[in-house]
Length: 88
Image (cartoon, rainbow, N blue to C red; front, side):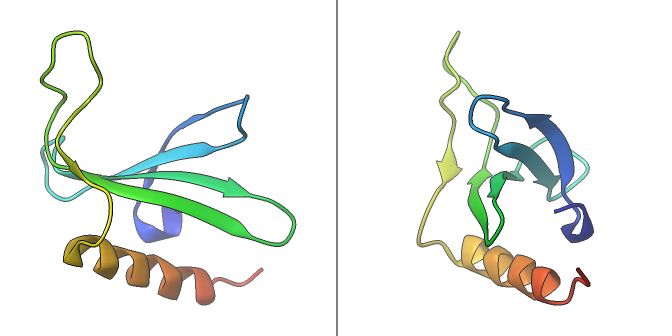
């Protein structure tokens, strides 16, 4: 994910998922937000786009795009190309 321009955020020791983010500008939002889980044979990437900071006092809900969006589709293809070209 770092090769794709993502910054490591944290590791969830319960699930084994690693959390990454990639800003689209110099500001904190919008940003791509990815949860990655790898095992011996595959890598799973759960990706969405956070449009803005959470705005519901005390809650983490925010405006985001989670599926069927053109920008997410392009980012998925970009990440796939980078993964395919990585030497292992």
